[in-house]
Image (cartoon, rainbow, N blue to C red):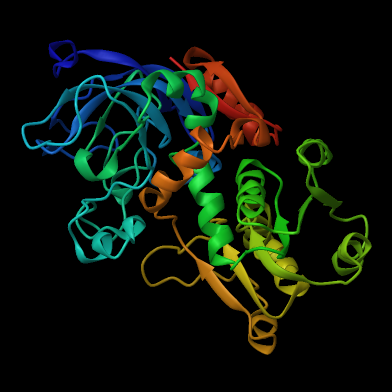
Length: 399
């Protein structure tokens, strides 16, 4: 595709300063990657160029806006559905014209971790540590973000999921757009919490990840799924999607769970909130009081039955090398109740075959569940602001 030669520019969502996203100009992608804000140079004969059909705003993008690794002009985003326009010399399986879903992990497919299915911790895609993600800066591998008109996808034969029916994929774009991150993240969490037929589940957080997790629990046969949140608008939407809800702060969580289930505990708990930035900031600024960034996780531990399981797709900061951030985690509750815990970045590629089938053949309307809302790419800054303010929708950017 000669139209994406190095030297041209395109519209993209870029880091515009602490807490701010904007739409600006960014380099067109190339298989010969040049250094750019947040991007490391390399040659990608194993990659392809993709024209964007849809790219989503994610809660992790909010972390990037406030994190130390973002630099001005860096292209953001890591959820993409698009059309392949050019393939590298070493690509064998993917062809121009294929409509593809892009998992958010950048993974080589050949290292020991990738061969074990741990694509969130690829040993080759990031020179600084295991694991790489698009649009999060050099610390996450130095790969350009995907909220742009065109994008580079490396290791394409392994990473890309080629949608079997391109026309159907376009018709179901608001569902297909969620295959790269939010749906596999919810599914991975449900599997990690050992959700199965007849399970009862409590999910902390009724944002897009919590809702996708609830949909995954239903797909896996859960008997009852309860979402807890402080955001009444999000809970109202969750109820409209057929899930039970509890308004946090309106009473003791075990009592509210008992009102729904008849008992004050569940088989599985899932933390879709992660560390509370406000709690971390408050503890650091005041120097006094209880550090409670793990408040949501402690709530989850409190309502999971002895011998149950907890999954943590919510993000908790590792801190700089050698640091151990104080989280206020109720480890005694985990230990005394013999709770199994799973955590970490989702290996999204592992699940794309089965989840794409669930969406396109099984009729899983995940876009309705998470309230996928199309927004022109030019209005991305507003979508970021609405999402950051607790908006009910999952915003899907359309170039």
